[in-house]
Amino acid sequence: MLYLFQKKVYFVETFIVILRYYNYKTITSEMGVTKTEVFSEKENRIADLAKAFAHPARVAILSYLAENRTCICGDLVDALPLSQSTVSQHLKELKRIGIIKGSIEPPKVCYCINEEVWGEAKIAFAWLLNNYQPCGC
Image 1: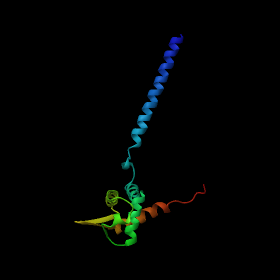
Image 2 (image 1 turned 60 degrees about the horizontal axis):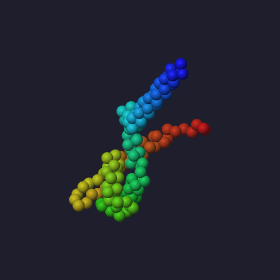
Image 3 (image 1 turned 30 degrees about the vertical axis):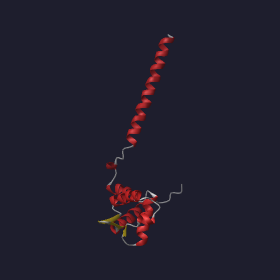
Image 4 (image 1 turned 120 degrees about the horizontal axis):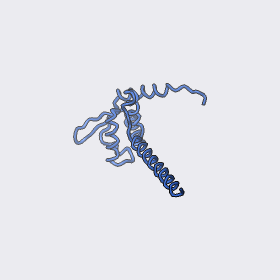
């Protein structure tokens, strides 16, 4: 009888371990998926625009471009405490989002704020932030 009981306990423990492993694999495999298709186009766009401000280097680049109110050609690296490759990667992401525009005329690459997308970001963030009504909690 004891042997049979030990087998049942071993079976239950093994089953619990398998369930925990399956649950862990399910959670970790689903966590990496963004599932952007389940959100509205507006929500996805606000999230994309927010990426422009999601890193201090990108904020510094945008701030520098906004303060200078002109297209900057090549001197961003001199203005920021970052390497050329780091600045280039952040410029690439900002350009992908559309918040900056650039023209490539070798040997210079000039960047400036895309005023249309900048305005879109202002409206989108204002809409999001102004939708909050304090509830007293």
